[in-house]
Image (cartoon, rainbow, N blue to C red; front, side, top):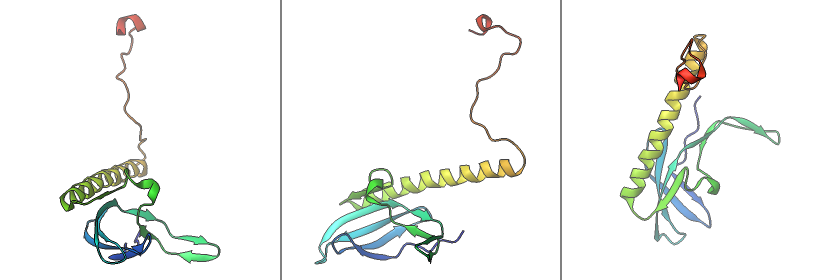
Length: 133
């Protein structure tokens, strides 16, 4: 699915201004400044995606969205250090990439007619409970 990308510049939260300084498919780093233009820090985020939807009779396209305040600490961090923001964004990206690859592998197995199941214990056929322990 194609998603409308996050904007390169965003103004929100009391007229704070955010400018994207780095991104890949799964994460981004934004520089944050206040309404007067003073530097406040960086925000590293995992990019969230929202499917197309209809709300109150109006159609909205599939789009990338900025994490909400409840996501802070899990999908986003604020820091004054660009290196720390970049490290966090790369870690968010690595995690999201792993999730995406796992979902793709699972759906491929399902399409091929194989059941997807989690890890299981090896079976000791023919042994009683006391012989197994």
